[in-house]
Length: 251
Image (tube, rainbow, N blue to C red):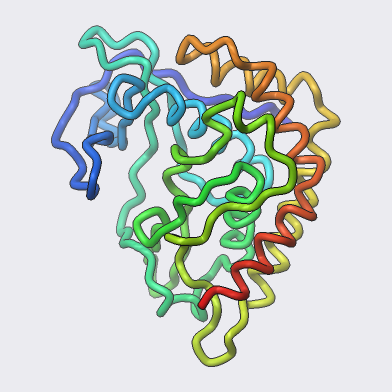
């Protein structure tokens, strides 16, 4: 299998800001060569921690089966926007609603999102950070915005053991009529967590992820990031089990 590699861009055209409550961190941008539209977060506006978390989240998420859109790094922009994180826009998308829980085409991939959040300690899984895409009457869920995951702060992240994310702002995932999570979501989370436990065997891959994420923003904390990521992935099954148990008990 070819190793995952983020695309590199050298210039973008900035457009309007994205109206996200309480932040001015993200804006729409376009590739002047291909006209591809991106959501852009710069290190200057969003912070270095955000870029580290997005990079690690994308690599880990893609590796365990979470549905993340294509992404890229902007490293040498002549207008001074680099470094920046770019996420491809999802066409025909809307924000999450639990009314779609029972009709998703990819509930197992929603489970993989939960495992990803659990491993990286991402508590920012509210309705605006899950997208629903409609195509010919079918609905697919997409994972966006991992910038708040604790892995973005490597020294702190490396100190965590088996803690799970806070659920204060988490979407409800229990089926309204059954008061439990769809078994397909749980199965998907468990399978993704199992995949995560295998990843630390590839030390070179993990090291490449950590070094890339830190080099992009000029951080020297790759070793702390690597240590925390290895530990959390090795214990992904237990961490994910605890996260699912807490989600099941959401009021």
